[in-house]
Image (cartoon, rainbow, N blue to C red; front, side):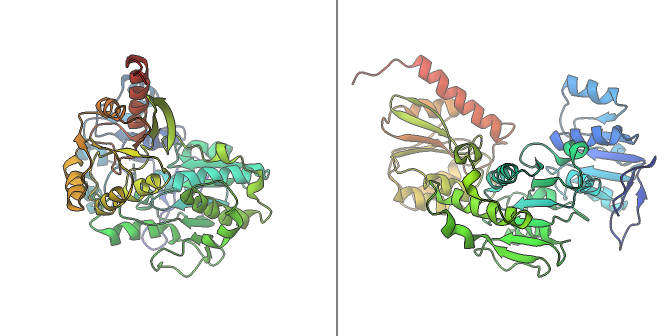
Length: 447
């Protein structure tokens, strides 16, 4: 059972290896958003917390955490973080192969993530968890909108922006908890069991973290690991064979005929189909008719219109951090295209992207970041002959794009952002600012 109250902080790990442990001393590795939320959650319950981060901490954050009695370490994870630790809560960005993780396993210190910790203190059994290579954020948001429109009390959290552990105080037994979960988060679950799991799709991604696609797929499939015959799994018919037979399997493509009249891109129609299928397990009366489509699908940095300069329309799709996401974005437009591609290479094959580009009306390809040369080689290999430029930054890319009036300039990198930016949000914001700056600075061209 999940322990909720009492003077001691107790975490149930697994029935076969650990009993419930009295975790008075907890180490939190990684102080991103989920790490910070975890530290505050634990400190508020009287737990002695040691928090360690790979980078330097902001002065305001240090002051806040020190005021909570937290012991801090920055600029690297030393073995000091493991001293007296009854439990380690690790952030999703820290790989299991990291040196500190290897030492923790050697010492048999229990390891879990914020998702697992929050689950063990969550009073609601109405948990819907969404994973997949692409479409997670959109499907999570749309599902929240569908349930809200029908009058259900809903909490939307997870990888979509706010860690679920931040919401525990307002969750009760009747709350529907809708969670976007990544493969990184699923790596560290132990007992996490959604009543409804969604596995939307699968495409090559994160091969800078996983040895191969099988390991990546297996991490995604952990979403089914603890489900029983009383639970449900919503999946695509396009997925490989899934390693589970316990939950009731529902194929979301079956509802697509009901959605053909809606003005949506094909990938968003699939996202809506998945959200509808899962939501109707909770409430069969749920209908897309109550949905404000424009609001529900307005996801920041996902094919988001930024502005127009010299008859060039600029769109921010910075959230497209893999090839499959960029392919979906390219299919959204019929106008001549100027794609901005590149960033941190996650080990993916860019050949499908190059093949799609040579079939589209592409006026100029602009490349940024570490992956520039690899993408350029893929384009050359398939016979791309239009202009191709490697640019220093997004400001230069935007300036180049203004020379092609009548086109759409699409920032859809097919790569993660960590070579040049803190995250994809920062990348998208820098792009937006570049468009605004050049719209003010460049004089109007004569017609």
